Length: 454
Image: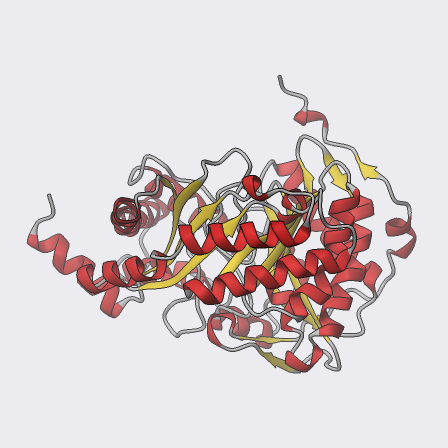
């Protein structure tokens, strides 16, 4: 039972430290929507999503009002569309038709994003997988709320380099087709290795085939709370620092657990997982970069940054797993450049480079996230960046991702403005040396030796 001091403390975290529940995400299986006719599939998808999720936004708002806990986003994740449309989508336009229906569903039920326009190709591509990937530019250009992802690697299977090569070309084409909107299509698309089935955060959310028919997953966020807690232990040793982060992560996760249980009960849908990630926003005081500075760095990117981020990520997980029986998704610290004001400041100060970000992704929860690069970057270079990040995930047995945005018509030092939670980003330089012959080899990079466990 909560005592009055805990109530007051939680109230302060919400009103003074930017604590929020970042998302309630309803996962919906579309496997029972499969049919040989794309029109029938679209009809089934629309009927199922608008029925299952009809009260999602309403319940989210009720919980927000009753408990005073901000619930920022209400979202939907679905079965990867390449699986659902495999029997009916004979060309890319058929897949785009499904994307438009998903967009229509999202607008009908009032969610801000629907994720799962996805393909799982870590060992190979089916014709349906390839058609979905080739449909991405048109699908993301013609929809507003659809998010997409492709899983190209895993520790067990290696990395599908044919898919990596195709995606470098596809990402450039997505930017070209959304160039009049600051190339925002790529802000809704992410490439994964070891993608989890239960991630509630966009753009990478999809509803895994091992999940129940419907499920409620909740993502919490509290960089501001952690930062404020660390202010009280400035100069203390690492033991005190770690204990403070763990205790704070526990409190933040308990808030998410409360919201998840309430949403599950009111919607009569099973509770899945809590994702206890520290997900920043562009708001001042809601930054992972600020936490790293409070730990003792002048800027994110300074020597010691990777160690500090590893410490932060580990303590967040240790504190969070004690607060909920079902922790999943990504869970840790996110470092999206455009969505974190102090990360932006670090880039502009010259402290944070693409190469340093890559090193940091070895120990954080996702990867190279919301990074804007020059629009004239070659497709092979984009593929090389993806391959490097996928290799980190494969070898380290963790999820890694790339959400990179070539901004057509802009170069290093210029800015791109996405707005809202997506924020703004400085255009970052990329290595100018070529990896074209490497990417052109094709095939699959084998799984590492330590993957052979049975």
